[in-house]
Image (cartoon, rainbow, N blue to C red):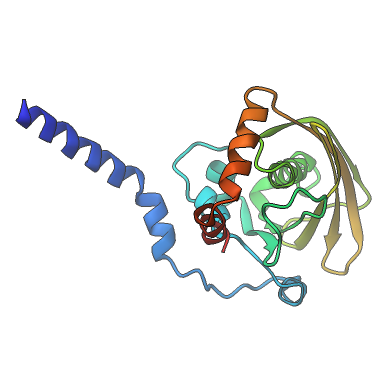
Length: 228
């Protein structure tokens, strides 16, 4: 009996170590890589940086189609970063959340006209909106109810672009968001709006649990470590 318990414990430990390898590799990798893109000065001046949690998502063994299948695919992007302001109030319910995405798409994601497929751009914006909605609602998961993208200019491969996203307002379970896509000359290439709806299953209980945790020092410090 004791041998069986020891075997199961050893197996569980081995499984956990194996599953954690992608995260350990991420933590071991230098997080101070030189960033080289057209919006670097803006990001630094506005005191933005990529949160550690985004690195975790990009290194996740889970088969998330964007983080795991696209971002980790070296052929999809020449550069891809998600930035949040360092001084953001993570536990605030105010509608002041902002997020920036800087990307440079590779030739492998070209559409029919040798430009970036608009579906990929919509995917990046949708994912960014989802992250913002999660923050703005106090960590309640949400789903896309409506997403509208209007393109003013073509998005080209091998060029830097900035997607600037923000929460406009939160009304009950509804989260209204907007985004603007800029090229490296600060021209507006596209604009997007969206409506996200927080999930109803366990949403209230989930929020109550989070609000309780937010009053603890452990929670606040843990969130900050995950982010920065």
